[in-house]
Image (tube, rainbow, N blue to C red; front, side, top):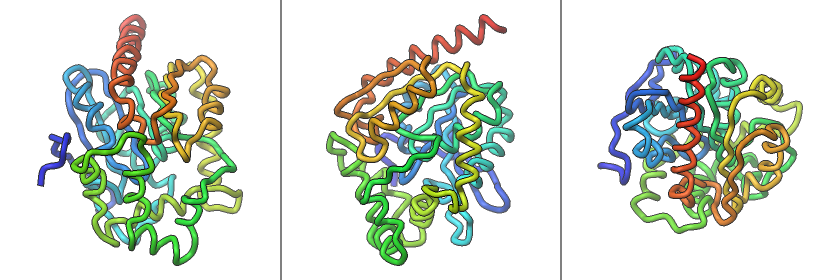
Length: 292
């Protein structure tokens, strides 16, 4: 069944016997878009359609998400997703690109960027984090509780299902909501959503804490990389503290704040964000051409 506003056919890349799906649309400067939880490449559908006539849009679905395989015994740690992104971009021979990151895509994408700063032409940051924080909303914390969390997330679809209501300020059209939820239609297919929630490292004894520390340290390698923040001010999760932290760490970043937009800022404020991305990418191309 066709998905609303998603006229794309995924390609697939084998990672240790598992198929990782990704979009590869258009030609030109690569723009790599990294999604979070509980979304998938569908989150970027409008941005891909807007850019694909001028840029090469590469949008992976993390393992367990979107059209990618959903292995039940996979670790689903942030370092796995980071390594998978690295392997995909090596496979595609991406020498230089602009990153767009959202939610968990911030840690994953900026983790890759910190390792390969010389290959990053610019970064667009959308309601995300790539550093340690001590705040977690209760509604997310509950989804981490033993037994109860798994029942809520995998059994009742209480994370992805709730996001189509709670992650936006404007009510989603029913066909768009169905698009966001399409890959997550069963207990089995919601495994990565639950694992992402479990993998949020809040304390040093968490298995992914060292990875997050390394990602945070890697941000220092990106001090000279052009950055633009497009931030939804009505996000219940990545609130103004995170926005301020990005601005503190990257004071040179171009910042745009959309007071009434929610966590899925591209849903609530796409018409305002699209021309800003156009301008940012145009300046990026000008710098690239000036430096050969």
